[in-house]
Structure formats: C-alpha cells, structure tokens
Length: 595
Image (cartoon, rainbow, N blue to C red; front, side, top):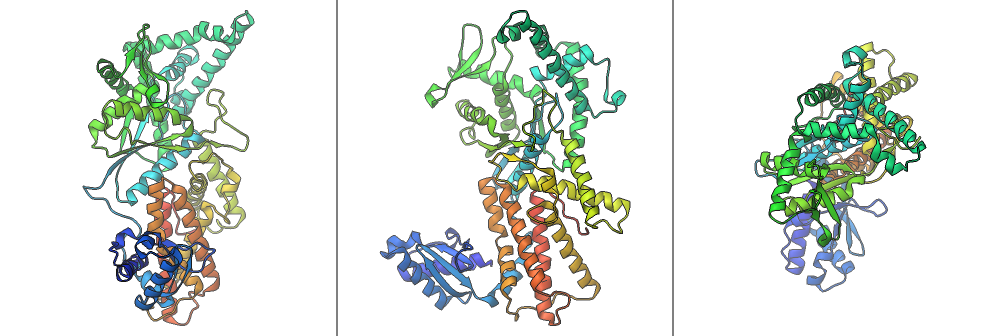
C-alpha cells in the first residue's frame, strides 16, 4: 500500500472508533503538508466536526492521538486549525520506497473498456500557412493533456480538425493563380506549407495596396473593402469551390497536398500525433444539414435575405449567424458538422477543445447549440482555453508575415542547444551523430518544457535564450540530472553494486524528502488530469530534480561503504530516474541517458 492509502485507512478507523462515523478510506484524500508547516502528510478534519460536536482543533488532536497510539507509520503530529499534519516515522519510508519500486507503471492508471472515452482536439491548422509559435503551444498542450488523461485511466482519442476550406484558403489559391507562375515545393525548394503561406502574405500585400488606391480615390475604408475586386474574386472562388467547380477543386487539392506533406514533417519532429484527423471540407455540409434540421424543428430561424441564425438571447447572449445568405457556412456550422461526425464515429463521454482564449465566446455558443441540437455531451464540452504566446518583440501576425514558423523555431532551438552545450563542454568527446542527437533532444526539450511549465491559462512570453539553461527551471536542467542519475547507475552496475536489502536502514532528512517527493507523483498526475494542467507535471518534475540534487550533494552513493545504505541510495536514484522519465513522457519530452 502507498503511504497515502495507509494514512487514509488509519484515519477511517480512527473516526469510526472515536465518533462512530463510517468514512470509507477511499473518501479520505491525504495531501502533502505545506512547506511552512511541520509534517509530511496533512488530513483535513472538518468532515467529522459535526459528528464529534467539538472544535476542528479538538477533533484534529483526538484523531492525531489515536493515530500515534495505533498506527506505527505515524511518529508525531500537530494541528493547525482544521488541518492535521502527520510526520511519518523515518523507518517507515523504506516500505514506501519499496512500494514505489514494486509498482508497475507507478503513478499511471491503466484504462479498461469501461473507462470514460475522452476526445481531445488540438492543432486545428489552416492550410493557408505553416504552423507557427502559437500552434506549437497548442500542439504541445493538447498532446500532453491527452497523455495525462490517459495516465489518469481514461481512454483517449487524439483528434485534429484541419481548416482546409474557406475564404482564407481561397486567398492563397487566388494569389498562386495570379502571381505563382507555376511554383511548386520542388521548383522552389520550399516546404509546401511555407510556400502556400508566402502566397497568403502576398494576397494581403496586394489587397492592402488595392484598398489604399481605392481610399485615395475618395472611398471610406468600409467602402473600399466592399468594392475590392481582389476580395470579390476570392469570394467568387469560395462559391465555386462549394459548387464543386472542377478547376478550383483540382487547384485546391494540389495546394493542400503540399501543405499536408509539410505539416506531417513538422508534427513528426515536434513529437505529436493524432488518432483521427477530420477535414472541414468533409464536415461543413454535415453542419449545414444539422443546422437545417434545427431550422425545421424551430430551433433556428431564417432572415429575409435567406441567412440562418440562432437566437441565444434566452441564454444571455446575442443572435448567431450559422448560414450566410449565399448558403455558405461559417466556422460555427463547420464545428457542428464535425461534432456530428465525431459523435457518429465514437461513443464520446467528454469532448475537450484545445483552443486559445480568444475563442472563449465561440465555444460558449457552440456548447449551447450542440446541446440544443441533441448532443448529450454538448452542454458539458470542455474548452481548454489557453493564453496567447508572444515573443519578447511582441505579437505575431500571419497576414503580415511576422509569425515565427514552428520549423524555424525548432531549428533555432536545436542550434542554440548545440552552441550552449559546446560552450559548457557537454559535447566533448562525442561523435558527430551523438552531438546531433543530443542537440535535437536538448533543443526541443527546452522549447517544450518552457511552454508547458507555465499555467496554460496565462498569456506568456517565450524567450528562447532563457529556455536553454542547464540550471534553473528548464528542460535541459531536468534532462542533465536524468543523464547524471543514469551515469551513477551505470557505474554501480559496472562495479557490481547490486541493490540489496535496505529495510533496516533509517533514512536521513534528504532521503526522506526524496522518497516523499516520489510518493507524490500519483496524486500530481491525478491533479493535472482534473485541472487540465501539464504545468503541474512540469513543476513537479523540476521540484523532484531539485530534491534529488540536494540528496546527491549531501549523500555519498558509489563511495558509501555500508552496502545497505548504498542499496537504499541506489534504489532512490533508480526510482527517481524512472519517475522523471514518466513525468517528462507525459509532457512529450525525451530524456537522454547520456549528456
């Protein structure tokens, strides 16, 4: 049993004996004691105050005294208001370490056929531009969240919806048609997604020049936008696309195929994947059909110009456009269609959309509409709303070509990791292949960790220079510590130092702190899953690594002459490496055994 389970069972027995109250042990959730108080584990005693008819402090004292008298794992206790802080007997921590070592996939809960089926949507790129820094945060959060939810015992489907149609796609297509001169990824030597992104920027450049010319002729900005021949052509192209014009569809398929090949390269390098990819070109008609069903059922209404709307004033919102007067659909309609197909394909229990906080209103509306249209999970859909990521220089704009491409960012991170590692002498004596591998692992690890360690709901500034540091709360610091532990374990094996019996050893302060940190891993994983926060895992691993480094500094391992003490410390090292690797895997970050 884990230490939390032992304390929970003991508290359950205590309240039954003291107050005649039956409280199942599984309903008692011990927590790690806050650092400012003495103790290892804290139990909240408020649930039994009413039955005891005593103050919280008195209840805490009575339960603590009962535990001290009846549970060998409890050495002493103190009470702060309604919080019972328990200090675990030093010799008992060895059995905690033994439990960790003997538990397969420690901290991770396997799903079975009856486990909830959760679908996580992330990435959602447009096929008119390459993935950029904002997409990187989205992909890393989505992938990590999916892995954490799996580790919490859920069945998880990772899904992506590709925005492969719409006016923005037509802008790139029209620009290529007008000014592309037959350019292809092969003829230009560019990744397909980058090539198409160039044409999106080119369209905007010509469009702005056109607006300026019209405004100089005396038109207002709004009049110029309405009169723009270029935008009119793009809209006409969208209508032709929806009417399945062969020439437009052929151009669309060719250009999108270039983009998908580029996306696949980026996803692979980033280390994210999907179980199912949906395309808006396949879902928008389903959405139209569902909206028209709602119209027939009186859940939507049609205006005089033929457009279809939903009245959401009863929910404190406004009126929402679902079909334009020319019959073309909007994003909301497409999301309804995608939901219909997903619900048909999978018996979803929960749907989580990983989308930035600028779309909060959109998902508030989508939830209402899906519920209105009969999707059982509609009302409870989760919008995992995360903050924007900026660079020290400020915001990025796709249309102006000022975004930081994901590919360029990863290249820069790997290059920086190589130079920093070389300066510190960490690449000395390595082969070119080993240098390439370590630079890639450290560079991408630094990028991922920096973006994931921040509370996802907060806006953040990504600073590449800060992220690659072998000290402090960074990916490279954690990776380097993991490699150090692996080196210790290799040397021990080379010298024939097997892990033997350490049950009679009384662990010291640093050893106890490290064992407790390891014991906190399962609760941290569950908390990260409940709060949708990979940052909890990231910062837990960092704290674990700090605890190990303090232990490593104070406690001799390979030079320890007492074989039982050495065995305890080797086991501590082995389990720390194991938990670091598990935690970093949940973040999608590789940890190298050699650095």
